[in-house]
Image 1 (cartoon, one colour):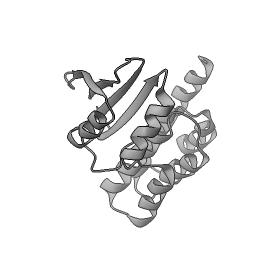
Image 2 (cartoon, one colour):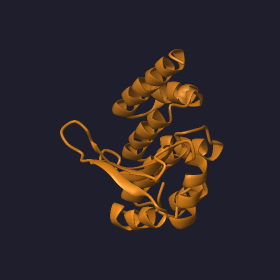
Image 3 (tube, one colour):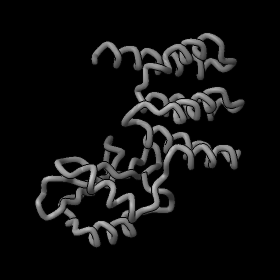
Length: 184
């Protein structure tokens, strides 16, 4: 995930310098809260997707295809990227609600491809924040990861949180994770 303040204009210049060609773009509209640009190298065996998620207010890059690992590494070498340790340091340094919300969502997106113990710890920390809004945002972030390891934590929150909306949301996220685990 590109570190802020990356935007498509600055990233497009880098994509072009890497030999990528803009292939398609889809604007966010209606019930589709994401905008996407697709970029391809000359061989078209790999694709780079710039995704702007308006619901989470984050932008990220997905690389797919034959040469995904090598192309992703080339992109990482040109664009400053967020990783879990950087996101953890932001949470420690900042108690601003907007910054915390952004960091929790970014953590979920960065970690959603595979389990990460540091991301787990960061999201679990958010689930215990004194602010119910931060706890609810953390629940959304947990749902993005899809990690079954959160089920016992969510079970506890659904029974013990002081705020009914948080308890209800925790139960829904827990049930969704259980359903996802059953469908694997």
